[in-house]
Image 1 (cartoon, rainbow, N blue to C red):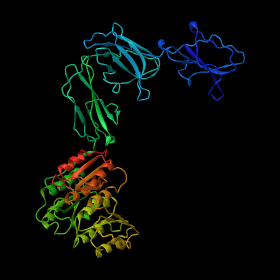
Image 2 (cartoon, one colour):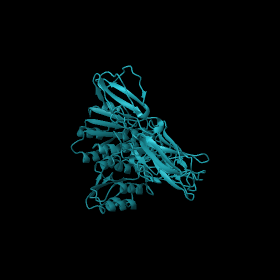
Image 3 (cartoon, rainbow, N blue to C red):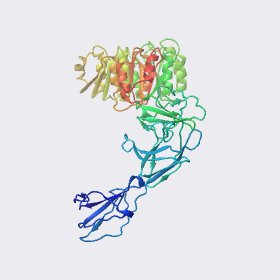
Length: 575
């Protein structure tokens, strides 16, 4: 056995005092050192590898930190000191063949992986005539075992085919772990390639691996991983991605285990769960608006808004008012009775009152009369001589004492106004409409409101109006994209941080975005616009960076195609 004497300075560090670093014990394990200068010392003892004992420090410590020290005066002798080396941990078990008979001469190794990349064999032994083995002298650490024998397929603990997939287990100081048994075989089972269903995992939706029927005597084990780290407890066929898994690579490993076959291993491709993507749609724009309301609003609401489903003019400024009142927007026609889906939804909602957006040209008397039978309160109109005057009427009704923030959008083009609607409503701001000039009704309302900030939305309004707006508020901001799609994306980022839900609607027709504005506002979210048949670059950027829990597509395939819907379902967040 080797040993060394260490001289320790006042600061606890080792002092080089010119002696050889290691000495050997004599027969009987006797050690001695002579002519030592006065000082404070400790000692380390290292057994030969064959002894299956552990290095031990003075006082029985496992390392320099836990070692004790002793002090020698000039000429002092310290005699009869006994050092008992630490025995280390041991692992025992039996290795057998596919027929269950013990295998003699199988090699078993105890392997550590201290660095996470390099595998170190701490001890190696061979099985006896009864297949038994014993590994010893192991320092405390995490270990795996390898089992091999000529003519058989090598395997690792616990029925794993490679060191990279092996299971590690903790070994405490001086512990004995028994029954670490293994079965070696000469062949592997024939298995089909497992399949993942659904192939594009979604947050909140169970993802299942299908291995197909197992051969006789074969069972499967599973482990799901997040960013290459095993997920605690995720050891079943199914795993439901959580919100924190959104966009993070997942995969599953499948292991076969059997006494007749050697273990096999399969890993799925990397899977980045997308957010839950659903579509809210009806047979037409009226039933779609009713479906959006049904998904977001409970019965007994204080107020419901009804707008024209045929023309967007009067509805533009009313959408933020609905958001502010946390009310749905349902659709009706200028002529004839209410659509059946609208009437049915109002009967379910039982609103205390109903507000109609627009005059008789937007929603006729027949529908207005029918509405009076669907509420216990009043049915009132908010309208003006044109869309600009209607916007003023809505603003006066909602903000009789003025408003510190005002949104302005082009009144002849619906996209910018509708994507601004949920933001204006959430921000407690009216939405006024402009054209090429500042109409008298608009300027008069701005004077009455006395805003501190005006937000101009969209590329349709001439920037020259900005200088004119300076007379009505100290701060003028523009949310102006290259087109309606970029403007919608800019508005969707109005609130910093993550949003729970993203809404996607057609950018070429208004009804779904109109009804969806109230739902988006209730969820404190904006509306992304997309062409019917392709997801535009701005929507892609917002989806990738919003980190929302789910997406809701507003309208049927005629409004937002199945190609766009599938692109959102299978969105690649890694690019």
